[in-house]
Every structure is written in C-alpha cells, then in structure tokens.
Length: 208
Image 1 (cartoon, rainbow, N blue to C red):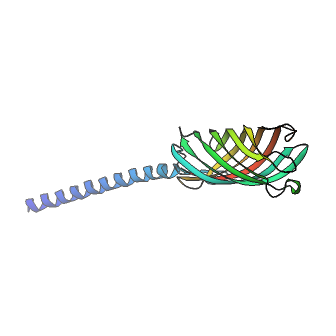
Image 2 (image 1 turned 90 degrees about the vertical axis):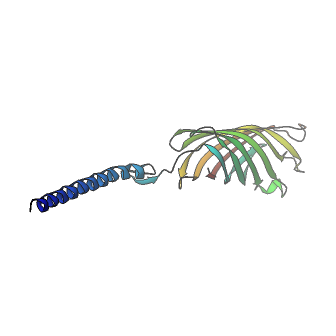
Image 3 (image 1 turned 135 degrees about the vertical axis):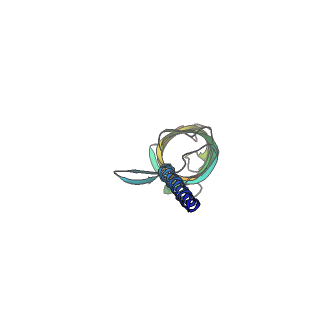
C-alpha cells in the first residue's frame, strides 16, 4: 500500500515539473517572437512600413529611368533616359559605384541624332532611414548644339537627393531629384555656350 502511494506521488511531481518546463518554454518563445518580427516590420500611427534588412554592404546593382530637361544656348530641351548602376556598399549607409546612362533629347530642333551617353563615378550617403544624398563625377558624349549635332564631350558631375524604400530584405526602389552640370569641350564656334545645366526626376531599382 505504501509503495503504491509513493509511486502515485512521484508521478504527480513528474507531471508538475514537465508542465512547468513547458509553460516556461512557451513564455520565452512568445517574448522572442515579437522582437524578431519587429526587425523587419515597423508599426506606427501611419500604418505598417516594411523596412527590410537595411544592410547595403556588399555588391549592388540595378536599372533606373529618368526624365527632365537640359538648358543650352538659351534653349530648354526635354529629355528622357535610362541608367544602370553597380558598385559596393562600404557600410550600411555609404555606397560607392559607377552609373552608366543614356538619354535622348526630345527637342525637334536637335534632330534624331541627339543622344547623350556617359558614365559617372558616384557616392551615395544615407542620412536618415532611406533619405540619401548622391553625388557623381565623370563625362558624357553629347551633341554640341550646332545644326549638324556634332558629337563632343561634356565633363562635370551631378548632385541629388531622394528616398529609398525597401521591398524585402534585398530589393529596394528609390525616387529622387538630380541637378547635373557639364562643361562642354570643343571649338567655341561649334559650342558657343560651354556650360550645360540639366534637371531630372528619376527612379531606381536596387538589388543588394
């Protein structure tokens, strides 16, 4: 009789210990789960924003599209173009790379051969979340602006600001404004106005 009672008491103690361990494990998992979820999703009064990993270190690349205007010889000409950028992330907030671009002047007086193409070395700095400042320095092949659309070289750079949104842990898109300034080389008879100003609105897709 005594042995049966002892066995019954041991079973009850074992069940209580197992139940307590299971409850503690469930509580720890419940506390850890929201922290993991908040790493990718931020909530607030304006709704939910998918932030992604926000880790820009390593290789990146992506295409883009832009449109705007170019000012030459007291004439403003609309243009539209495509670009492709690639490079590496020095840190989560600093990118260094190359941007290749090609654009088409849409002014009727510039004719069908008014293409602009070139490349810039660029640096991109993220100041707060997705807000960034981007600078570039390089050259372009562009028409001189004479009646024959003689091809010449423009040397200069650009500066822009914008905001980048994350789609998931490795893909993002950005929208920004860019000001571009080029000094056009060549004979002054062909290039009466050597300074060319451009303003652009663009969108890029970036894959990290």
